[in-house]
Length: 314
Image 1 (cartoon, rainbow, N blue to C red):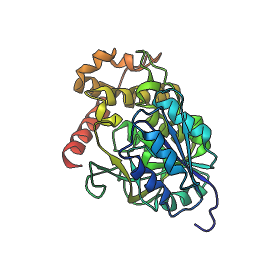
Image 2 (cartoon, rainbow, N blue to C red):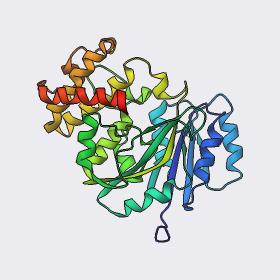
Image 3 (spheres, helix red, strand yellow):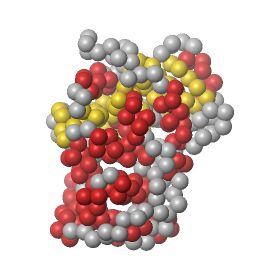
């Protein structure tokens, strides 16, 4: 890493995380790559989080802390982090998650290749002990892969990440592709529930670059608890909004993939009849203006088999 001197911004949006924010920030401050800033934006917490991080910032100049006067909602708080950041590279670290000390040292060299859009690592989801939990996003050996495989892999449910909490990007790509709102036909406010904006970031950046990189070591740790978005979003809300973001992507950017996505949307409707509560009754409701609702039955069968195998053997 001696040939790397660029500043990396670790971005930590936070709201009411007094009990765990110190552990999260400690994992960021412990990076073996030294040229970092930790940008923390408190979204008007009411539990003492702001006072705690303000005191902590007095002990380490790498910590830059900010507070919103009112709660802006989650996505606007993410964007405030980007607004305050000064680095060339950006690492989103959710306020309840952790990274290994060598996360940046292991991922940053891949971005020396201008054809590589982002890097992500294998991830463990844990409850209390980061060394115990289920492994996620382990797609193979460490190395460089085609972004087309990421895009199509996401559409077919191959286990690629939806959360950038396990990844490193160029800061400008985060600014250009982390969208406040995602256009949809059912009136869903993506800026407030923050489900799908994260996946769309990966897809849009994948469409810009020919390659992405993967590190097979488990260097990212996602905490499972009642306050996390993935746990708090019950029933079909989480998969529904990820599929709405996929539909936006293929309709706006990759219409050649519509028939493949439609197969997955058809299976979604079979599995989650509760989607009707959100105004999604059939495939057409996932799209804004697309009128092609056909799909390959062979692709649908392959997708179904793959999902069953993943459920029981992964």
